[in-house]
Image (cartoon, rainbow, N blue to C red):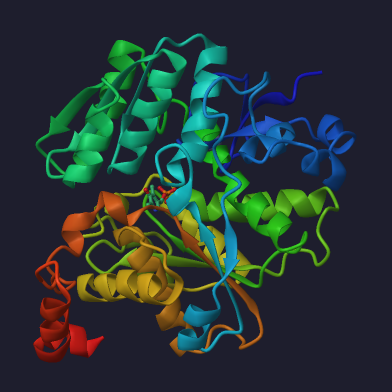
Length: 416
Ligand SMILES: *Cc1c(COP(=O)(O)O)cnc(C)c1O
Ligand SMILES: [Zn+2]
């Protein structure tokens, strides 16, 4: 029996045969892959998962591809660490960091969604893959396309960070820098997908792409000893990750693999300069209003999020909340995480840390509750965000006298 049975509309329930499709023809709702739960529940146990590889593929039975992975063999199984020093600053005893800043191969959580989508793209017979990206997806699609021998076309807004652009070009792909913001890039790609028949991983293959993010949730629970946390704080761009973490936790519970059910409250984090999802949650609006992004957190600067409604629904259903933070607070968040835990995250991580601090200050977490902060990307890729905010090096001569002079007179050394 196949593991995936077809596709179903999230909104109206209409079913479709399995294929590279993503919207319902009747209501334009997002499609999801239907898994064969009879088959899965007869096979999946804690032991069967633990016998798998130290990568996201230990959950292969729950990922919507039929055969073995064909790219991204080492993606996932990133550290979950008890962040005691950051926890002290936030007044939380059981604060954890899920650290996808060190996800392989391209240092963001996007490797999970791309490994899934390109494995499925091969099963569907595509030879050319593409994406609309705010940066991390570009890096990951380019790397995995190279690994899998796909031709690739990467569409980005023209003004992305250097690290993200270089970290795409290096793989020998075609990069199209669109003179517009992400939402305009995305619109162009939706049209190009129809015309050229390429597999746009986050458009054409979105239902498969999205389910790659479930592994972020599976890993958190397994690493906590098969327990779902009380809270997860997640940075939102298109709004997919937050809902898929929650979906992942609920799937493990459905398989009776969790000790404590799913008490988890999901919290959304965005930049104040691009906050359609958090604004809708905070104002208890029925629908979100698209925004024009203006923030240094470019990787999550999506003004018209494809899964914005699903993200709002996830937060509400789970009893979570939302916080957005200014660019200044983003930089503070990056520095706070680095100074307390030795982790250099990108701007999206700065958003998440500062948003978590805000939610803690509002009293939304119990002191002893288990709170997980989702760190989704690496700071080496967005160096310009902090380049002039870190002080500078102290120049000295290679002798002890020069060192002694510097220690005595230099303002920076004395400040430490
Ligand atoms: C893409 C991205 C996100 C958010 O992903 P969505 O699923 O689109 O909400 C968060 N953090 C980073 C670093 C990203 O690149
Ligand atoms: Zn529908």
